[in-house]
Length: 259
Ligand SMILES: [Zn+2]
Image (cartoon, rainbow, N blue to C red; front, top):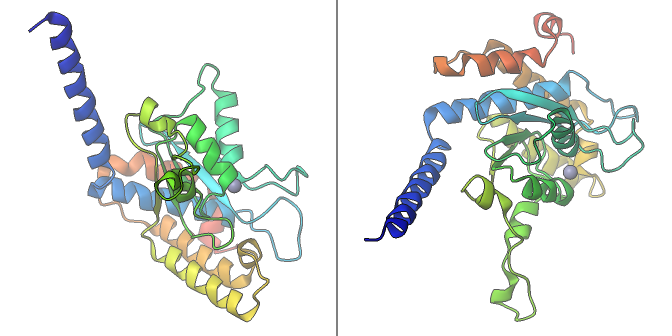
């Protein structure tokens, strides 16, 4: 076998091994715990600057945290569309642009994970595709503007010759894995979805972002914040991540329950 061919085969095996390692990592009990901690961090981040229903101060009650390949929370952001008077200022957009601006020389985010309280919209998801983010975990399905990941991955050419093939997934190129979206397995996710669906049945014109300013939504966010503060670690290797998560929430807020 020629040396070039041998080198090619060895690199292919290495790529396959690293791909399967990353994929498998997403389902380990340690990773599931990291997913829970980071999602609780995102809920708590929103609660720590809760916007009441009649306010138009900062933005919607939506927040995101960015987790590095080393499993550390490296950036966080809240929706700020009112404060900036700029409708592009969703939390996930702010998260990616702020982190990239603060880290000169970094233009992509392979193997980074974004945890966001509400399922990302098409704008935020498009940015995730372009930065090569590997994974997004969300804390509530968005009945209005959700499903963006599935829509970008849809192959409509299968049904229609003039349809579209899936949008290019840059995480496949940068991180050797397909970009994936996952709903959080925390109970708060289901509770928020059910309460939101009920509120929409009562008032069909209600938007998810309106529901997220209700006292009903706030109560569920408070439960999540209490769980973060009282969280008992199962895996000691996640202790730094838990510290990072708790730093996002003012200590007095947790002690006094003063939301
Ligand atoms: Zn968005």
